Length: 105
Image 1 (cartoon, rainbow, N blue to C red):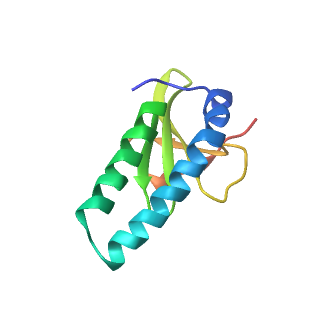
Image 2: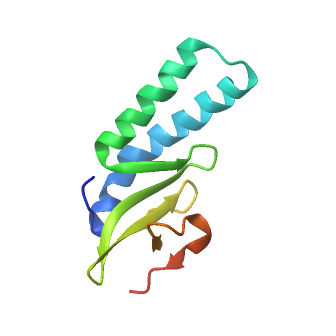
């Protein structure tokens, strides 16, 4: 997986956001009525998002992570649908959403 600076991750948000919104809609549809075509559409969206370098952590929330380096160690920059145009949080690779910390400029 590539690593991103905060500004590089933020530059991808306009591409990632509509894919995540589509993923949410299709996942909700699949949860109501599972079908193979919808499952394939979901997988295609996951692959497309991964190609951009983001890792989907929770499709229901629209939660994604971007690998990054912070003070010489690998961490995740963490962003979720509804959080605006900035990536404002980071967390250790093993701590997940509950370990999110505010990025202090």
